Image (cartoon, rainbow, N blue to C red):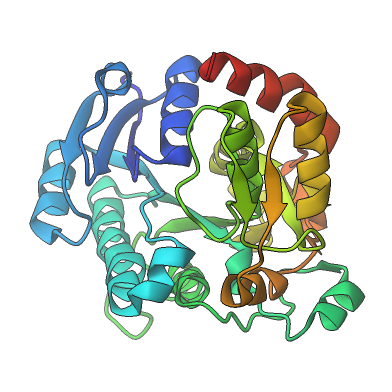
Length: 338
């Protein structure tokens, strides 16, 4: 029996490259990728087939589906928050319309296969929008239902796509003749800020943490665009990849919702700077907060409650703050820039 085919969009990104390595190591899937830019050779070798193209190209997606019986979609492609604020129209096109194209493709594939395609969608803490630092402190760990009033286009896009996925999962064409036909199996994770040692940060609004670390490892000065008290949840990249595989392989009958919070550790920019200096004593880190970007970060919760993910499918991060730095980030990033 052949291995199931997995489609990974945005495969050349921070999460994508790490996920490709994990899927290859696990050896249970054949992987097809789509990204705007061609994958480097070392990653192409991990894949059954790779496509360079835009998820807005419906002809391309039709070609991918025509050539492969896709049973799983990891939809990682997105325009992140910083660029999304500079070009909201483009963010909507990529993040919403692109996602809708993929949902349609996957739903059609479900019909051909006669069973639901699993559609894994990484969402974000950007879906939250707390009105003030005082309210943020008071709120503590927020649940999936709390404060879903985002203040960025990226957050609006992610929240809307969670609802789109829920619709395709449970209510697609509910008044149509084929209302009970094979629907999608949509599963979404709300990620905190992610810190990777293998890939450089790509300019997201939560990137102040990884940017500090990568700059220090390269002996470069870094000016943080948030103040030292800015605090949000973070997660080490290996845990992010494990969570994606975990939600993919979770027993559908035990899932009580389509969207789950997951968290790793909650730290401030100042605490990250202190920990970076511990490993790189010469690190030149200063704080020059940008009012607008700081406001965005301050609208995100200090931490998120992930009790439902732990109860429903056994989610548990392997890395807390200290272990992430001691066992993953510092050893790996030191080798990267040696």
